[in-house]
Length: 123
Length: 328
Image (cartoon, rainbow over all chains, first blue to last red; front, top):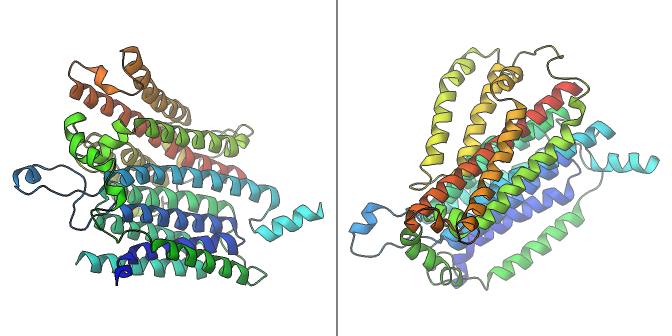
């Protein structure tokens, strides 16, 4: 029963796939961006899952941990660093996507993909 | 106990994701996305990633929701039903998902201490960073010192996104300057309770942002989180007292200056290290004792990151709100 321990990865994959489904099946551009956000959050979840060690604490040195005899185990700080910056970069890219959506709406009067395509074809 | 919380939160996340798929009202979708972010922040706390949880709570629930709502306000609030049945999409998703699940079979079990990821650079960071770099928060040492070059790149990406946003949305501003348009009442001006509570909270939010900025070495926090929290204080101010008032407090010109100053400060510290005889972003050369140099360097670059993130986030909010006002 070794594979039961993978439930966290599977949760992240389920969320990733629901975000992916929203991105490819929905025509509304803002909805697509929402899906993209779900997708990226689940990727963050996958990374943080990999950094976790059972029984460890957050990677912050405290005075209490120095006093105890047994060495304190810390979770891996590296994925935390990568994801922390990725979150802020993610919101910046989302904002650029939203700005493009607003401009598309001004130009075409709609943010539905099929209507935009129909208007393009009729030109 | 931890496992139970973990599974409950994961279940909630899955339910929220399914609700987002089904719901047609974009407003509800955006609100659910905020809930999704908050839940994932809780999950990050249970997995010991406190800094990440902090960022996710501030960015995903605060700024991201505000920006999505701002874009929705200028477009269409309702999603139309797609004319085709997305069966192919469902098939693609199922196949991709099962391939990924098959791939996880080779991954080490969740939480094992001897997984490959924990064997290479992580022990160095955990054992040596309090001695080599100094701050008790290892995430800050890795972020600002060991991987400072990465962080510089990411700050530059945020800056670039800000420039892109101004280029995309700021163009029509020239035709009708904001001072010419009649001052509009703020969105929340009619809500007395919100206005008074907001007025009481804004100074506390700003103070908390400064605490997060300067306490990042010792606890969860740092430039990224502080910048976002400071920006959310200003955004709350502009929602309650109107965009024009907020623009008098923090003008767009000052934001552009601050945004570029932050990146320049970060890069300048790196160049200063070269000038003092070290490598790029090698803070050991900044002071007589290497640990003091590291401390000073981390302080300066966190300040740069915080300034840039704050300026760009508020700039994005201004860009969306001004666009909405000019077109409506």
